[in-house]
Image (cartoon, rainbow, N blue to C red):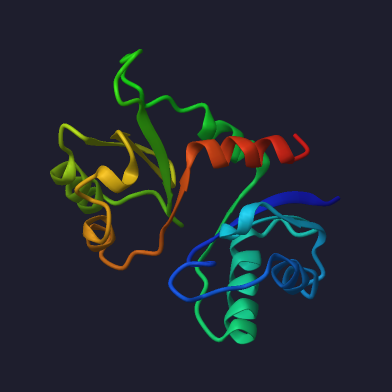
Length: 182
């Protein structure tokens, strides 16, 4: 029985790593995945596989993409049900009508955040930025736009200390969930 997955790829179509979505779909099809489709050109791939071994799938995808593209592509797999649950997290803190409205981003990890990573993020919290931890995700609420956050442009990257991670806007995640077969 096939299972649907969503692959969230880090570093696709940013930092000089350009790839057309047709080619990205083809690379996933070369791995014998079915029902492959991409969503916006930022490294979101939906596919089906007979495998239930998410870690094995992730390793295969990362290896294949690095071999074919010539650079490492960190991959984060979630099932549609996992993504749907993630989109139910509310970080608004009951601030209806807040101006500017808060932005909600999700930072994806391979494993739940360690105590030291949680402490690092706690030190980064400010009037503008707040974090909530849930499983393998960190929910980041920004009062305003990401580009207005003092963490934009490297501080957040340094905070994760090279830990594999990728970030998506909550609106993108909700649209991804709507494309899946829940």
